Image (tube, rainbow, N blue to C red; front, side):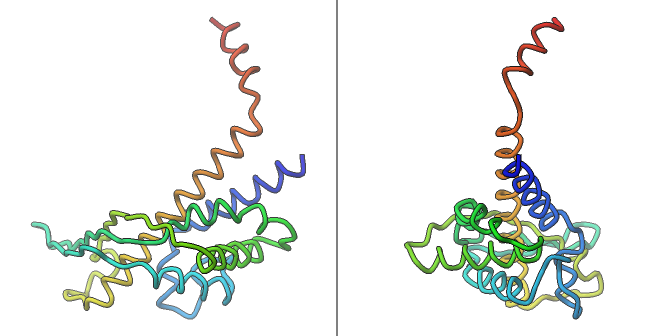
Length: 184
């Protein structure tokens, strides 16, 4: 039962990490980008994002004047590293912020200890939503936005994997199958 609670808390934290709509907006202000973010986890996240490299990057303006960037980003497979570390990060974590700090730190260590497993993410960012008044973007800004979006996709993949694990581990599929057969 305790493992179920820990798994559910971890899954909830991960979903909060990726579902918070203000996630990227906090970067422009002095406030953290997530309520669970500490200075250590922010530093780890920035270091992880810095390893992402855009292979292709282009911007387009549609007929309504909205500017969108699409990019192909090569990034370490953080969802894999997070999957390998989340149980260890959950053990002994005092709260959600401590869990996030530990998870990011452990993933960084794994990344440094072995051969890097890379993945490519196709990302799309509506630049008009990021800053409607801005008409031109520097290459560095576009690279940073693409890296952030690719990292966010890695977080999504990991969160969905954890949710699937928690649901499958604590769902009695035989009972559900029997219940379904009886109803027919």
